[in-house]
Amino acid sequence: MRLRRFLDPLPPPLRPEEVMPLFWRIRAGDQGARTEAIERNLRLVVQVLNRFLETRSVAQGDLDDLFQAGCLGLMQAVDGFQPERAVRFSSYAVPFILGEIRRAFRRLVAPDLPRSLWQRRGRLLQVREELAQKLGREPTLGEIAAAAGVSSPEVAEGLEQLQPAARLEGADQTVWERSEDRITLEQLMAGLSAGDRLLFRLRFLEGRSQSEVAWRLHVSQPQVSRRERQLLAQLRREAW
Image (cartoon, rainbow, N blue to C red):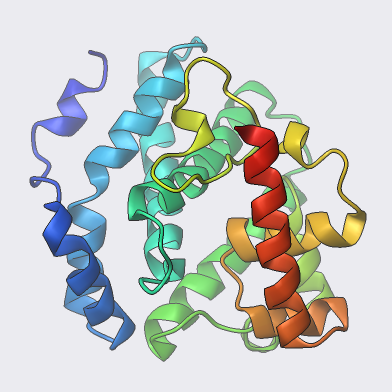
């Protein structure tokens, strides 16, 4: 296994009964719990990266960059995970990890893409990460904009650029984990309206709150909640 050197120094993964109590501690603002959640899920990054490498040729020297990108995705997932939701953390985290690995891979194979796109998005992600640690919660678009010195629409646009092909979460496993079909969200979402696609992206790829999505779509929070449930039911039916 090309990634064995990453596995050797890693701590053991969380036991199933440890996961939710740890994330409730994170919800309460325990930064030590956040660090533990990241460190003890690093093996998931290795697992996702190993699956990614099954269909791609990557130089040995580039593996560190891809692993670090996956770790960034893991941190985003840890910060956005909501323990009250009936979904496994690993299922929630895979799209974030895979998305960052894909972005890093695109930078390796297409270095001529405008650097301004990568730099702007990287800066916004850094600001969001710093604010999340400081506030103990996911920052709003307005808070990120104020800290970064840009407008809220610029933040929204920057964080939507170069989004990954994420995978649909099922009750117990992601569609990404089903090797017999590997249905991507792009295929499943092809028939959705632009508004529904944006709602899904903000809620499940960026982990935005329903209130933030409601503000962005100019609707009420209950409308977002109701439409979210309808979309999940529809996409799961089509996936399965």
